[in-house]
Image 1 (cartoon, rainbow, N blue to C red):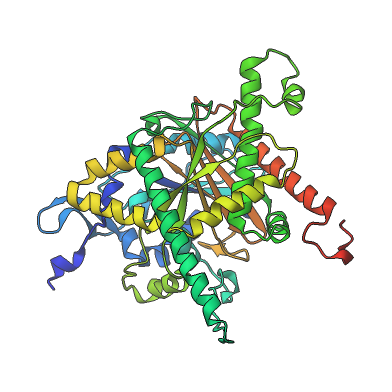
Image 2: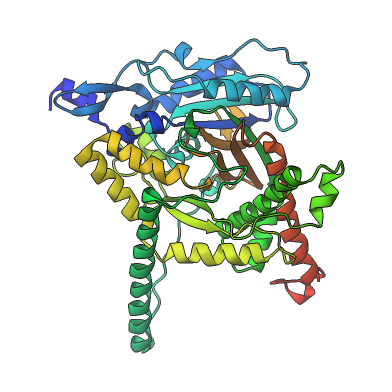
Length: 490
């Protein structure tokens, strides 16, 4: 292979899809640190760790005849063009609002395609959540959220592998003569997978052709990806999620989806109350009144990681050997449509039960994998424009996007500074509402990207989700659901 050929790598179909105007998506990760950032030390660690990954040393080239329309070309990196530290007043008023405004502003700026598609913004101002904040902006064509979190963790200083999410252990179960039962269960499971997959794909097809969600105060329309967004987040105790998860025999995803359903029910009830009532004490009025329209159709596009195994260890090795991590780095994600039952429930845990039922159905489905394959085929056969238009219709005809990512189990030091939290989100997405959940040590972060015109009070939506989780927790403790009798919590 020639040196010139070695400098080029064909862009994947998903990376090419991210270059369409309707999918010009950037990942925005808010990194809160426990100390003030030493800019020189930060740059030194970025150069020592992050730049070992070739994707962070490559530019996206267009119209290369021999290698396809897009390809990655290795280049030199000048950190002055990627790490920015504006001179700020450390004693400014309303630093939290400043960080939100700053993040909203940089989300509107297109990325420079003549350089690698990533940038750091160092904000040395103390907020209510951290002593300093760094905003990482990276184009989604470089990789998905799992890739980003993984490479950041590979860059982190860690004394042991206990910082990393553990790999799932697989145990061999001895056969005790229950062959017939196992065969029956395998046949039934296969039937459910085929049935759920077909139903999911028909649901996707109907959405592309004609099926739209109910028009609500949070439902976007075609072209919503070009509207300004606001980015807010809340940090809660991960133990609260785990408590509800254990009590309900559910997963973190189930509880998170239940939190979204309950929070949206609260928020939309309030919004409909504002539209239909002029009372001054609207909060007290809607608290005891169900103002939601009947038969609401609200669906979430849920993101699924399609990698067969965790990639943290692989990325750590790749950072040292400078080899390519083929098949694991990039946009290896699929999506599925999940109906949301948004209403006002007297029994808070019903939200979790319904969310668990919906997510269990998606676990017995190949819908995300099929959508991923179909997107690649459409891009290769018909080009990124047609693939982009069809994929875009799935999003703007639904109400929100939902994703949950696993982070380190213990706090880490990143680029020479102790990291307090991670709050990822995205900009340029064709929906009015995007919700990300991110675990980090004993914290669980709810991160929201909301359209400025439709969702004018995203902080209220965040608070409604937090309050919903508190209701779940209080209900579990009060009733002693799933808790031992000796816990004293009944």
